[in-house]
Image (cartoon, rainbow, N blue to C red):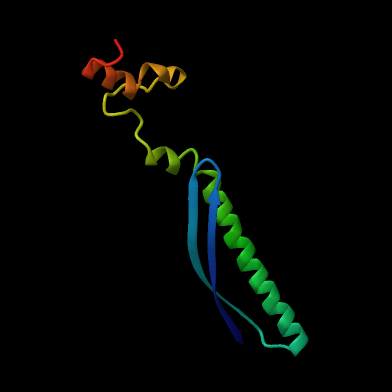
Length: 107
């Protein structure tokens, strides 16, 4: 009996309108019957291929749910004022305008 142990490490950095980093690790273990050297090498390669495919499928499944679950939980649903921010009309919020009004400048 031949036992195969391994560790899969995935380190990725993705930036597109945000900064997402992944640092994942997964340990796996499997066994095969010891055979002729050529057959044994094929068996080990198949074991590695199987565990890599399985792990990548689990990563893909978890990432397909990120926008609907994890990312939504990272942000507040409403700001502290409990009202939605009017992204369609951000000009109504102007720090410069507020400062000018407070200091009486520009009148």
